[in-house]
Length: 152
Image (cartoon, helix red, strand yellow):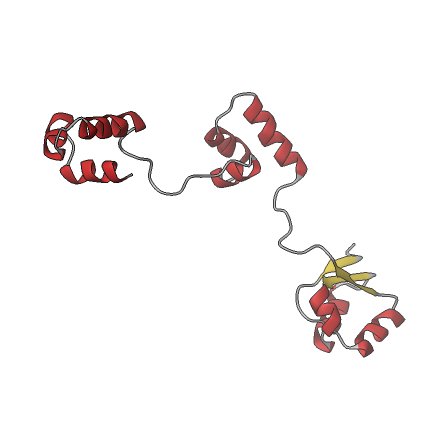
């Protein structure tokens, strides 16, 4: 059943015995290269006598969480016009993962309260000589916000 396993801890005598008890049909142990290099030659020889190969993995990092099928489904649904939140609900995938799969960066923080047009209007009024106090009164926004928009 489990002929090949991946071990993410150093191969010690205790670990090897536990693995052999848990997986009696074991044929291959895969482990990170750093653990492979630190494993005693005695342990590697003993495992090879039992016809169990120990192989370092070359691929680094965390394994992919979503299969190619999930990625295809997300991309297909996006092409069909589904929103990311609809896809998240339908496929039971976190919304952030839908954005990640689609390669769209999520913007951090809150969305701005005032649009770019409002910001341009404030800057234009200030440039035409209207004081920040008057802009605040005319556009019904706090004076502090006017100064903030002028600095951006």
